Image (cartoon, rainbow, N blue to C red; front, side):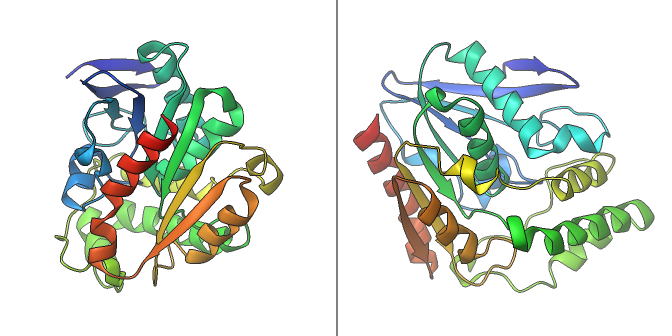
Length: 259
């Protein structure tokens, strides 16, 4: 696979070039291209006739990284994204799609460089603003668990948390991150938040927000707040796996409509 160097990391990258509109696809915290495929969050699998750029964020999957928490703050990961787009799709405006941390990365990148995006498909937005502090404390505790007891203890604790009903039937997976880097990723997430509300309100491109119910890590309240703030947004909320199964079609529609 091709690689791309950024400060402190080497990103593993792939481009599926079928011509057409450029699309960049991101993944969530502790995940990767491979793991999102297992979790049915690889929406790009339904695309054709596009130039689809996928990559593993620093410290995730096949990409490298350092054990430095600040490297994994969302605005730093957004800098990686913008540098990657400058190198692989120079001067082009792209459609961005990604869940959770990927959603947050896209929002930070769109605030920094609004001309870079034609439109966005944002999946399961994470906790933000008032709800972020409690989640940040969870990440810090998780980092301590990994350091004191190991990744297996973290994975077992994670499996005790009820899963959102829309994810029923997806396989149980483990973080696609090394045990050495996982605490730094968690602490970087604890230091992160979505951009300020007033900055998000300035993202004036078409946005589809795809959320699901009963997930404290990705509350519908964040999705609703984004739908209210963004000037050109629509929101869909999934309640069942059947609803999530339609998300690749939603992405295809978004790219066709705004590409």
